[in-house]
Image (cartoon, rainbow, N blue to C red; front, top):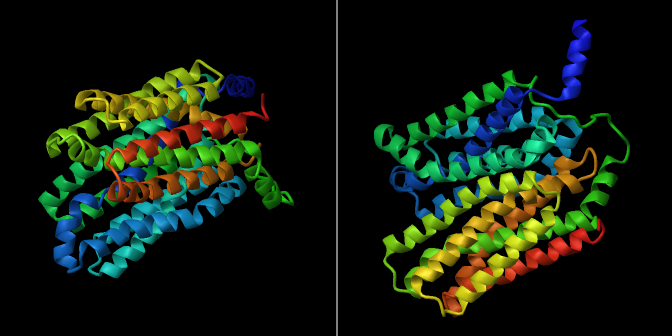
Length: 404
């Protein structure tokens, strides 16, 4: 009798409470992964004094973090497909939070760099693992909103890191601030360990010959290459706007630092609001490609108009707010498209591959935009972002050609 009831419950899918618990747990880990990216920012002055190093050396800590993550991103994606997302998420959370915790107990600059290299390795598990777990644990009808919450948590991690780390450093010192932040991650690690039973991972884990060949074939398919280009171009566009909006507002419009900073805050806040809207929209449509084309196309046009310089300050600010809103709206549909196009059993590798494009775009665009400002006009940043938006649209059209 009980067996029949349990079987029927399984066929109906996980309960609402179980789905919300999974979304909350995965979102909490994602928040911390983004939190750790910016956890050093308010600590740098005190670290420079105590460690007796310059800001260039301190900047290399974050560079080492991202370099390590990029180097192992693809192998980790393959391991997720082979051994399961639940185990890899636990391992990654343990590695990154443990490394950050230990940073509070060392006195050597070199030791901190090495610990952040290890933390970067741990950080690369979140995107493949989170995608696989959410796809397996959440019903299709609310998956768009689940991905929206996931993205929102990452954005929130960026937003709260400077405030919380500055407060902790002011009260306890920078070393204790890092240890406390790391211990928060260790608490989430324990929660992930205790919640292995509700974190579903439906991919079959049977060892099959030729997995690497199947993975390579999937990554070289038109759809996945299109997603890689989309992630690279779209993240480069938004990365350029995020890094140089303040510069453009000051250099071209003569705005004060406070006003220019407020415009950037409005851009980022609009992106957070857009994620919520995008999650609802993603659950109500199957044409996620049209969502991407409409949002990126309109963004490209609006930013191109701003690049001409014909807009006044407040109209330009409004254009940037719209660009931020569109950036958020597109995220859930973008994630669902990747999920749809990943072959069975290879979602981890596909997500890892597209995440490399995301890293390249975010890492490379600020340097290119800065060079364009140096040799030309601040408005060149807007031209760059607009052009990249249309490159992203082209990649969507190419990727969809096989499936229409």
